[in-house]
Amino acid sequence: MNVILFVCFIILIIGLFTNFKKTVLVYAPFKLFFIKSVVLISDISFDGIISLVVLLIYFFKSSNMKKSKEPFPLYFSFFLLATSIYTFCNIPDLHIKSFIFQLTPTLGFSFVLFKIISGVRDLKIVISSLTVFVLAMLVNAFVEFLAGVNFLGELVQSFSIKNAFFATGENLREGMHRTQSFFPHSIVFGSICSILLYFYCFLYIHYQKTKINLLIIIGLMIGVIISMSRTPLLSMIIFLIPIFLSKQLIKRAGIPVLLLATIAFCFLYDYIYSMVNSIFADSGADLQGSSMDLRIQQLEYTLFLISRNPFLGIGISFDLEKHSEFLYGAESIWFILLIGKGIWGVITYLSLYIEIILKSLKNKYFIYILFLCLGWLLANSASNMSGMDDYCFLLLFIMLYKLGYYSSLNERLLVMSSMIK
Image (cartoon, rainbow, N blue to C red; front, side, top):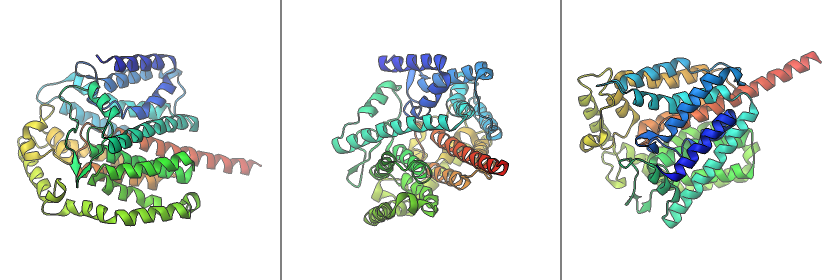
């Protein structure tokens, strides 16, 4: 057991039993640091244990907690996702431990987080904690890019199980190092930068026009670029659509910022175009990445693998490395879902996005939530987020949804108070 990891565990456990709500709110963004491969004992995930403790404390002490008044919007899709996780862990034999530790870190923790955020003050705590996390991620990434030293990445590797995937060694594209910070791969780092860029642009336009947020926005844009990955660029294009369509953009950002962004885009146009174009090319040799032809081959082999049980898939026994010669990393969430969970896994996964969109129709920030879904779905469709899941997406959805709810609630209260006067 790693001493640093054990100390972190003890601090979190003490915090959960002394100040449960604040500890969960502060820890929420840092779950992204303690990725699946980070283990506390043997093969037991650090974050899995923390999330399980959070879930148990919540259910045993929820009657004494101040909870959110608005109903949880994702009961149906979470239930469906839980069934697909259960069937996945039940083929060929039932793995109870795997089921618990696949269910609690993303679905279980996200449920508790939604329920305990009961006001704007709670959201501010999460956003402040997220800002600290983002700054640490970016500083580490820039040191890695400029000096070739990945301090936090090496720390994560020391926390992880021996066979955990972590891209190391020659990780180059077009002669440039593909920066990954402390994430398993540069694609994951770039995709996280892309979705966080979207959220901080939203914050800057609608709530917090601060210098620190502007620096974070610039840093995250650089992060997407130095990841040297196509997937983050594609998702960033989708994410920026509602930002540039916002009526408050010029008022909040100002003409100089927009001019700077336009100039930067002009300089990077050729690079962006070559990255996007390579996806649809017949061969991905120029960028050493998957082309359309390779993805078709991956799909064909995926369908071959699940031919015996297409509805439920192969289950937890599937080992991607054994089939890497044909799947080339299975660079799309749909390949992974079909192989592991079958058609039912695809249906349940899509149900999450459908329910989010339907339940957010009346939310003030529906358009931002819609493009959050579209951008993240595109990122997952274009690549396999090795070692990561949908927690970051759910975290940002919860914050956008809550901000929209409380903003609308305040407007209704203002209208009511004016009517009373």
